[in-house]
Each structure stands twice: as structure tokens, then as C-alpha cells.
Image: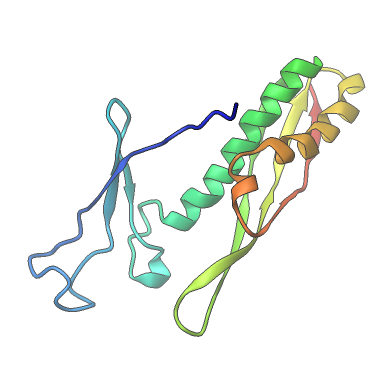
Length: 156
């Protein structure tokens, strides 16, 4: 039997400057993501779309979701395989292309994880498990663009 998981949160627009959306330039694109017992996430649109650069935008949250999902699966698989990871940092980059109608879409996301293992004998498995993590990642399996990996593996 398949397990079904449901996720919820609230998004509240906080950018009403008193006139609502009466004029395109008179409202902020700011919002807050709310979930009981969790910190609020303050967001806005990308500065290219009149957003606040000090807040997360949806595009950043999408690439962060892909990166964190991959990392969590990867750490899980490494643990099961006896590969000891002592450090993991990913400098993820997403590419979005705007369409002539003002919309757009992501064309790819590149994960750039820097992984630290405890022994050189673990490096081969550490590299191979990235491919397996991508196969399991819920978020990567849900997008319609390519998710690439450029792994750096260190020994410490």
C-alpha cells in the first residue's frame, strides 16, 4: 500500500501599503510563510520583479528545497552504506529563463555539494551515492527540469 503524506503551511501577504493592488507600483511583494511551532520565513519576489532582496524569494526556496532533499537522502544512504560523512555544504545554482509573456521556468538546477568523508576508502561509494540520492529525492522527482550534480569529495 502506498503511503500518502500531506503538507501544509500558510502564506500571508504582508505588502499592502494601504491601497492594496490598486497600482502595480504601490504594493510590496512581501509575504510570510507560517507554520505552527516553526520559525516564520519572510519572503518577497526576486528584486528583478520589484521584490525585497533581504528576503527569500520563491526561486531561492525551490533550489533550497532541491538541495536539502538531496542532502537528507544522501546522508541517509551514506549512513546505511557505512560511509561516514563529517561535513556537507552545497552551493546550489538554479537557472530560470523568462518567457516573452512575463512568465518563465527553471531549465536546470546544479547541486555543488562539498562532502567530507573520514577515509579515502569511502570516496568511491560517497560519489556513487549521489546518483542514488537523486533517484530517491522527492523534490527532484517532482520537477520537470534537470537536476545535475557536481560533487567535490574531501577526506578529513
